[in-house]
Image (cartoon, rainbow, N blue to C red; front, side, top):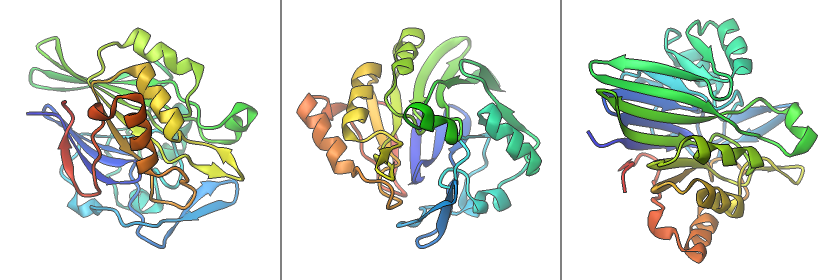
Length: 262
């Protein structure tokens, strides 16, 4: 089966990779509902998710980049199966377990978690990420990227990088050094700004990371669901065209399913 992604909205996707199905960053609030961003900050959602929790397919695990209200909201907290593995940061694991998600698994950077089915192995490795600039990052939740490898009979068949809500930072350069030949990348964009401070990649930073990682295919997500997202998708597409890699970018609409192979 060709690896594919269904875009639900924000950073929420359903990934079908081999015989495995993953949910990323579950945000199921609807248009007009507010997401809590911490430190007394809220943002009102501008869009509706393409799916509800009851409409999701059977899941093998949830991949959670960090614990912010636009990535794991109160709807997810109430509605998700609490026995599901949630692969996330150690900081988020502690809170999720207090909420009753007993299979939450906190992964320090470069630590891996495996799922097995028949002759297939799906390996998720936690990658570095930094949500805010400088000392401000300490006031924000820890964030991780994720590398998802599908192996069959011990041979790698597919490799996906999900950036999480990181900025472009020097530590990202270690990712292609350790994990070359990335087939596809889900990149969190949006240029989130709060009090004028950039907290997620805008078009220019996103393009820099594409040039650093050099995936065969890039699928942008997390770009227009909240007013704090200030860098629209078209800016990234224009930047990709200007830099000459627009042919390796595949945009996806909410509710659409696209292959993750070029």
